[in-house]
Length: 128
Image (cartoon, rainbow, N blue to C red; front, side, top):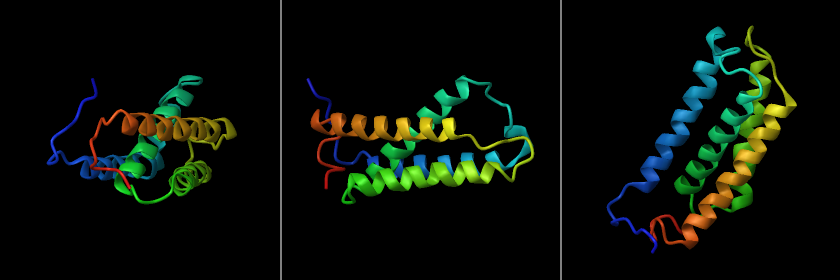
């Protein structure tokens, strides 16, 4: 039986908070030397996957009338900018495998959102 939340549940606001939190994480904390080597390989790919799945869902919730392609391009652009940004942080290094994990997480997040939407998980709050 699908779960339906009351119309007052702030799904879009929650999505916006998730997006802002991820930006702070990537470009705030990610700019410090302490962020380098925090999660050892290969577990860093799992973190990338989870962060970008959350980012994709957050973007989709925040902008429900935008196309999935635009949401995917925005999330993947953030991933690319983050990898380029790592070049300038002394203890970090950009990695194509990280961006591929970002890609996989973005795809998973968008598929998960589509599935949740079909299950009427969030009722009609975030539908285009």
